[in-house]
Amino acid sequence: MRVPHAAFLVMCLVALSSRVAAQTAAPSFRLGQSQTDVALNSRVEQAQRYQAGTTSQSATSADTGLVPAGLAPPSPGDRDLGQQVLLKRQTKATPFSAFATLSGYYTSNAALTNVARVDDFFFVGEVGVSYQPRITRELVAEITVREDDFRYAHYGALDFESLNAGTGLIYTPQFLGGIALSARYNYNRLTDGKEHNQFFENQTLTLAAMRSFELSKAHYFYGGVSAVLGWSDPVAPQRDEYGISMGYHVNWSRSFSSELYYRPALFAYTHGRDDWNQTLALSLKWDVTRWFNLTGTLSEGFNNSNEHVFDYQVFNGGLALTGTITF
Image 1: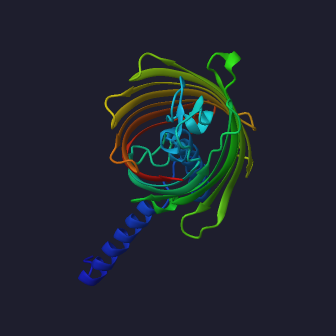
Image 2 (image 1 turned 120 degrees about the vertical axis):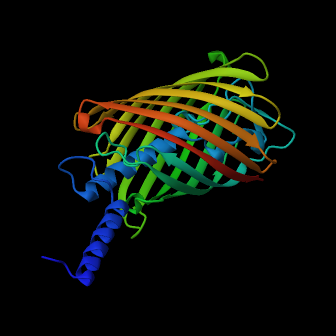
């Protein structure tokens, strides 16, 4: 039986539209889960990976007039450990800062899954403000509020917004020989990128200790431990994190620096799930001017769970342009 040309054309259009819809929907990567669950899990995981794996632009001590003295300046682990620096005052301290970042990344695993992996590009816009007053010679406070907007090139169902508001203290007593202690509370709210409805809320308390080992004025090693206690709604993604962070930083010139960073961590979920998570990242930063910097990052992530459906591996690479003003 011959199909009329018009009917054949309609069939082709229907097939094409189904293919496009499948690309813009959330990848179906966990058996037995709805697309809503898939999107929720992948967006929560992406938000937490991004928060833990990128440099906090709200705490750039060199720009605020509070500079490190023997401890590591901002690094990819700052959002886990807090800003771990022993601070000394310059001629004029500027504890207030406002910042904005535009970044784009390629990801080899958009849904962070071990089944039906798909790659994609995603873009992040961030704005925020921070206040870091020095209370005493050994104690510094920090308050930061920032908003991140995540947009995917092909899988629009993964789009979301992330609001973070937090405060903390960094204590560097002389009797500990350069070890910095920190405690920080953070509130995180995730909303859907289309309807802007809240789908995840999380509160965390981070306790950390860090020490750096200066090799010369141009390069140093650093290491630290942290515990992140979490309370979330819904409860299913709720977890505590116990991690170790270590890195090697090099200042190649006044404008160029690089950093190699590694963080292994245990993620302990409330319902008996345990994940062993590892992140390895290499970044190169160019301070274009006093107010702008360009950072390129390559990272590899590995997650091994006692519930194998949550195993995944991901490679990310991209560029971020950040503008910061201090006052």
